[in-house]
Amino acid sequence: MESSYYDQTRRPRRNRKNESIRRMVRETRIDPSDLILPLFVKDGRAVREPIPSMPGVYRLSIDEMIVDAKRAFSLGIPGIALFPVIPDSKKDRLATESANPDGLYPEAIRALKEAVPELQIFTDVAMDPYSSDGHDGLVAEDGRILNDESLEILRQMALTQARAGADFVAPSDMMDGRVGYIRAALDENGFTDVGILSYTAKYASAFYGPFRDALSSAPKFGDKKTYQMDPANVREAEIELDLDVEEGADMVMVKPGLPYLDVVRALAERSPVPVAVYNVSGEYAMLRASAERNWLDYRRCVLEVLTAFRRAGADIILTYHALEAAEWMNE
Ligand code: PBG
Image (cartoon, rainbow, N blue to C red; front, side):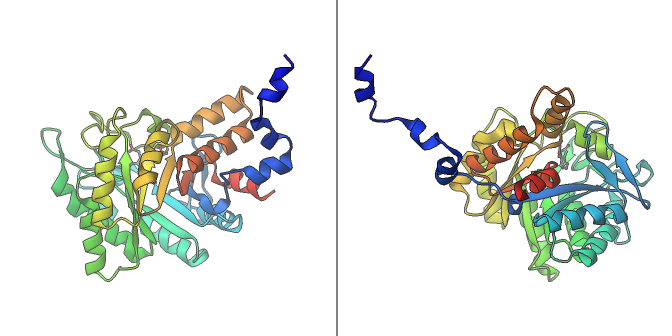
């Protein structure tokens, strides 16, 4: 027994013995500057409509969205990711509403820019919120998703958002070649300062369920497996990274987050541009649901999850926890 006191020259617990030393040796820190808050905007005034599968998250009319955006910015959150709730009556096969300069989405972008000019607005480029088929690309008669035909629609959508004042357009559709196509369109139209955050490694995940409830955007038939990635794969994430960087992406993203930390690590090791991770709706719902049952300590779990993203190598975290997490970080 006695010898163990002499044999153990290495005792890792010494660096954990009190909070001061733990603070000193901490490798990973999280800060409100790392966060992007996703917001759902819908028509109307003074609307703050709860989303049942995402307690604490709301569909907001523009005036209410500005309240949350201001709060985010004052807590030190530098950006928001905006998603539109489009009524079924405005959806069609071609996602025509996505190019309407007087539509809800451009109006929301303009209002935000006016209210909080420095807050960075990341706009979503994909057909699903506007598509009567609920797919991210154009659907052919036989049900296939048409890649190159979709690009033209995404291009008009991105330009409409840039004209309204988007700081970054964020293609979440996973069509091949869309980053380069959108980059060229932005540049040709004088939007050389508008950046692209690409959803680079976006998986065909079951964790998007609550988001599709929020937007009523679930696919009307089939699934998204011919364009979103197979959860079993990591090598093609590296191909997507190379392509997106070559095509001009300013930032790349992995989505979902928690089940894909190895993918975050793989891209972080190779990416010449910042890597974002999307802590998606289903991940949020899991923690919320267990907190409601007192099965987990919600606050500690949220902070642990956000720390894990940074530890895996993410520079930026899109998370529905952003407002509460920033408040806790600022305490
Ligand atoms: C669609 C899009 C989705 C999300 C962001 N953009 C859903 C999907 O691909 O079906 C999901 C985000 C979340 O679950 O929080 N372009």
